[in-house]
Length: 216
Image (tube, rainbow, N blue to C red; front, side, top):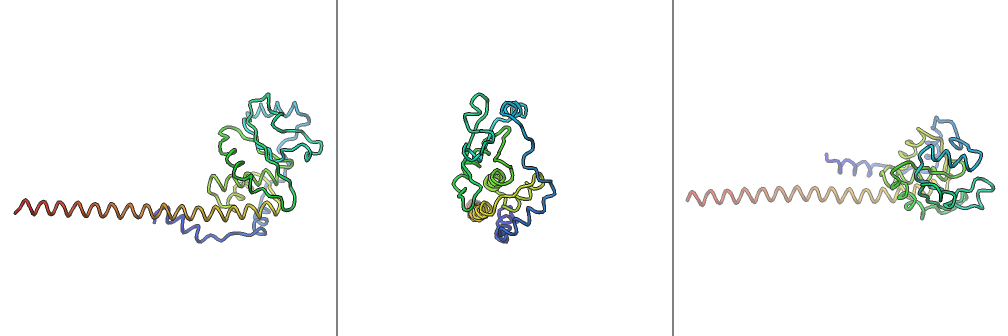
């Protein structure tokens, strides 16, 4: 069985999971909950730590001052004197907040960040995790539940239900696109084989005709 046909069969047989199943999946995480890997008490220490870690790109999913409520202000201006490429999106951790318009641009930014990238929000478990999940789905063609399994092996995450709902819609759309692409690739491969077979048959017919003609 060809790779395209096998992958196509896998996608056709895949049943989309619901939000409750995704939450149950995340509960299997054995990594202890850590809101952030490290806490830095002032901005000068943050800049020093970023430099020490070799961070070259930052995706900030809480890119607005008002919502940080006195926390460290980390918009584009903060990194002007550092060799850091910055991208910010405004995401509210609230009911029915639409993140769909930002998933593809942010995923593209992550994908192009060839060096060290920091994706952050406030607690590091909902907004930033949602965008990393979307990146894995979009650029690595991973199903949502597999992307969750990949992350919870390393980190405790818990996107809210509205974020999960939007990720399931993305998952369904990407799955449909993958099926169409695989069908196209499989059809092209099948047509190529038929074309080669016909060409071989025509060539053999021509050689037979040439042989008979020369014999006569």
